[in-house]
Image (tube, rainbow, N blue to C red):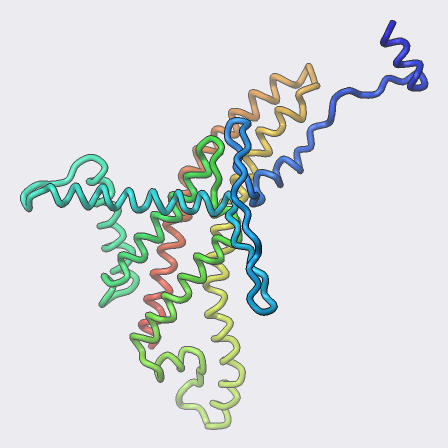
Length: 298
């Protein structure tokens, strides 16, 4: 009877009582940075500070969820190297590492021999600590996005751009130290030898902006590649799981969609574990390649 009264009051049409699941809003909410962290239905608000004004630039230094998981990835890097270092301190020269320390040693030796020395050449060992730190830092950020309620900080263009800028600084400083001021200048101001002075001047005008842009395209490619791969995997997994809620009211297709979505999301998650290692390796290897190229510019 109450239902009839409510229907009559609304002009003979019953108003819907359930809201439609917005898959797009859910995806943007999970991918975009936020000032809070959601864990098992609990919302943890992060501290927010007043923006800092430096001239005409306003800087908001309040931490977001990407910053929190970046700090967590950095803490995991420190924990990894501290544990391995203490293991070696307790060992004698005749002992061999085992377990976790043995696995980390294998990764370090592989990077030193097959990535750093193979691409940089003489004096390559001085770059090994930086490149190893870069690899483990990116790897941990990638893998943290695969744990429940975790966030992959590398799915943010700001994070990957900062990493690419750091790589650019190392690349250019390595080239300047190896080539000297005059040799480094020739990596920007290029004029082929053997041409008439007029031809050299003409080529200098054309090639200088090309060479300068080439220095910027390297970190740009590094940032976009890492960002695009990690974001695409995250969106695909969330989109598949979101289909379960989109078809929640469709009785006939509900169980088939739910089963298929879970199976596909699980397969893509396993693939993303491999992609997490692969993208960390590619970013590190290309940084080593670019360092080797500028140190041997001739």
